[in-house]
Picture 1 (cartoon, rainbow, N blue to C red):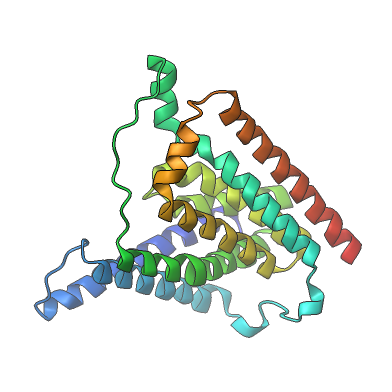
Picture 2: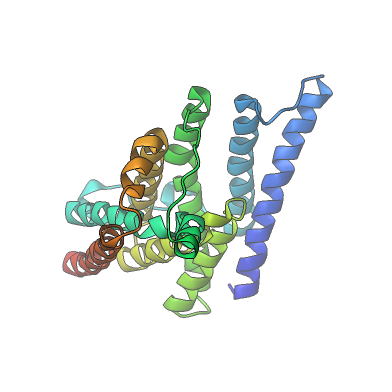
Length: 267
């Protein structure tokens, strides 16, 4: 696969996703249902249908491979040590992400000389939370890793080197998060690391596990947003704040290095 085709398939994925969403909402209108994205059922059912159908369409049309043979599920083919290193890498990655999510606060802080925190509402709709758990733990890690790592990288490697293949798949992965611009760079970074994990281990389940971990942390922070923000912003972007970012970088680099080493020992 060439780079242009990878980009076009990603845009096609987005288009199909949006069409499914709009189609579902139009169907509700047909039955005289009031359309509102404040309704968690309408919002999340349309999203979930969009996710599942758009990915399955692309798998069916462009991949043409049976899902059960995508990965070898025998437990003896997987190393506990790699799973542990993935946990360490995911913790480090969450620390690395922090400045990207704080970019506006950082700019204001270094411009004004102080951190001004507006009161925010951290209350969580329980129905929304249940839908997020279903989507972020059971749906998106499976479908996104199969498409952006197992499918795209494997196809790109036939005409490109490893670095180019990982970069392009990571860029495509970031593009689908365009609705949350602050998440573009973190998504790209995760795509790079997940791509490395897939290429170095040759097993997509490691990448899926990595993805699930990152989404679990997101949900934990979402539930505990008030306490977490009080803690992190209490450092006022001082040396402790930046030391945590450096610590995250070290943990991630060491864990990724160990994953490569552990996989060589396995092979």
